Image 1 (cartoon, rainbow, N blue to C red):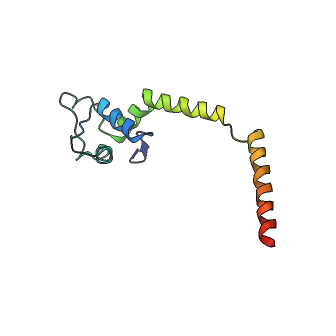
Image 2: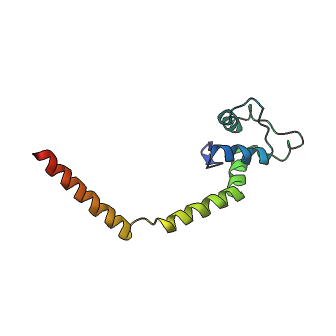
Image 3: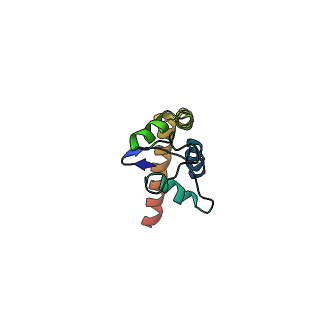
Length: 114
């Protein structure tokens, strides 16, 4: 999610809903997750839970700082790093893919020529 150009969340929508509720925002019972998440970036729509009014972020920079310092973001970055280690860009897997792709294209070009 972006708020005036600042990233304030990235990930699963349901986890995002929990992230902002845990931060102190109120999600009305009948609001869809999408409506709730959209309301977070609108000062006129978002609502703090009772007792949280002075603790929730208000500005785009405050939201971005909360996201940047969150455990959720740290887990996301760890997951991305793990994925990148398991499936690195380039190297032998890329060479194998490119070779098989080229062979497949050549096969299709030959088949369609006749």
